[in-house]
Length: 324
Image (cartoon, rainbow, N blue to C red; front, side, top):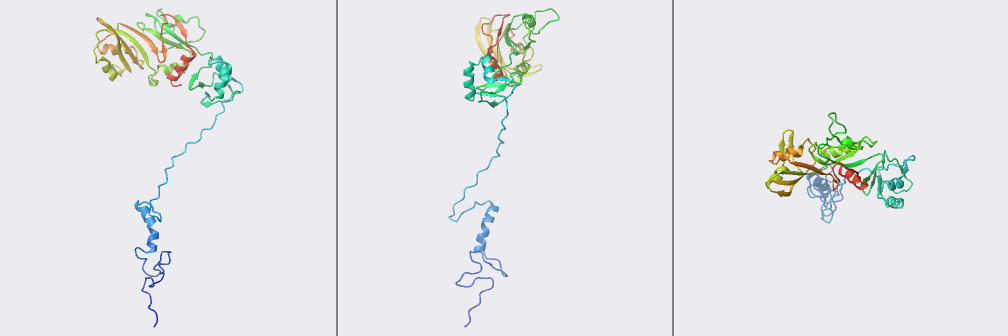
């Protein structure tokens, strides 16, 4: 008797059918392979990815997803800071008071010196002290000997101008013997005494004055007392003046006496008479006012009418405060 013919579209009984797991020609000329056959299993991974299902290996465990690759930043291209017409770096640093020539050479070799943002470790590098900027341990060193930085204790009655058409005493009267063209950093009104910086460095002066750079100025004011406990909170929250709201960075009571009080006000605003207007707005009009600090520079024991040159460290701290 002849063997029975296979069913249409199905596999022969007892043997490997055309639709086995090897991916043979399942259902050629007939129906597609039924669900659960090898052909369907082969299509499953694609279907799983389309539906968000995790891919599984032969063991049934979930394969770890590939880590997300972050876009790589381009490697900064080194800039040649060497100026063949310049001065040796260690010589300039020593002349600026950083240390002895040997000390400056060690700083360079240790990678602690930057020129125009590039770390310099070679001792033969020459730089232009006027055009290029140098930092040691992140602090700028002014190498341009033509730059001048002075602290002046402005006396009462002196106007913050370099000359005055009305013949009043001015800041310029105190620097007449200097050849540099100096200008003052900010202003103090005639009735306010204290620290005023003088320089011929326009970039630094601009940043020290501009409120966007946040360089704080400290004032001591004598006002009628007693001072209510909520005055500091009100000033820190902000006071609406005629030219807009202003708030102080810090306020504290320094001393008090019958009918008077000494308060400290710190702010980075530079508006005209801003400290006087703020204190008057909270009921404490100023009796006397002294500016004691501009950023990291302190008035100290400098007497009214006297001038002193800022040290190299003070200039470096001023640059840091101004973000230079």
